[in-house]
Amino acid sequence: MSVREASGMWNCSERWVQKLCEEGRIAGVLRFGRSWMIPKSAKKPSDLRCQKKKDGDPNV
Image (cartoon, rainbow, N blue to C red):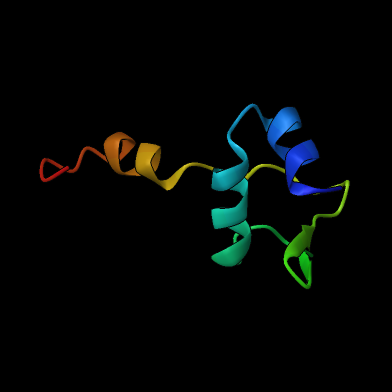
């Protein structure tokens, strides 16, 4: 699926999906020129910003 399709399914911005692809946080993603191709079976990665808050880190 494309970045646009993934952003619609995962309820987030296209830019955020592109960032996830660049960081390698989506398994099986491929880049074709300027486009990212994401497997249909890919799941939205967890938001690491939320993890920090859940861990009880007082420095966040």
